Image 1 (cartoon, rainbow, N blue to C red):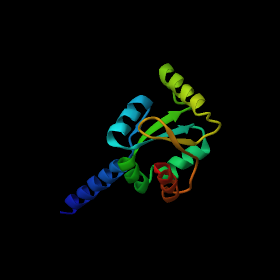
Image 2 (cartoon, rainbow, N blue to C red):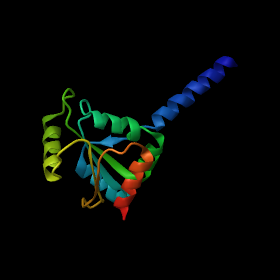
Image 3 (cartoon, rainbow, N blue to C red):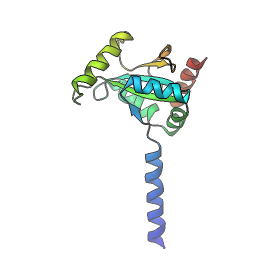
Length: 143
């Protein structure tokens, strides 16, 4: 009985961690098509995922929190536009990311660009210390 309860708890903990992950895309045209179909916003996260301290902190403090994940799954299509130092990107992905950074005049990381389903820019934000503040800023983009 004790073993069964421990196994059940472990499965529930694993399921909870797994459910708390947000699916990040890297293909903006595909993300825009999905956002348009599902009537969601596109959130572009311009990040230096393996070297930018504020980017890593944003991921830890906001993007990985269940409150944000739940909100994002209902309201956003998340796109990572990464500029890593160690992680290798394909030449095509690097070229696509460079083009997006140029298009949106990205000057620092993290920068979050919010688009509607038609690709129109409706918001821009940076680091916020918690999911509540970040979500409040995203909500302003809906109006």
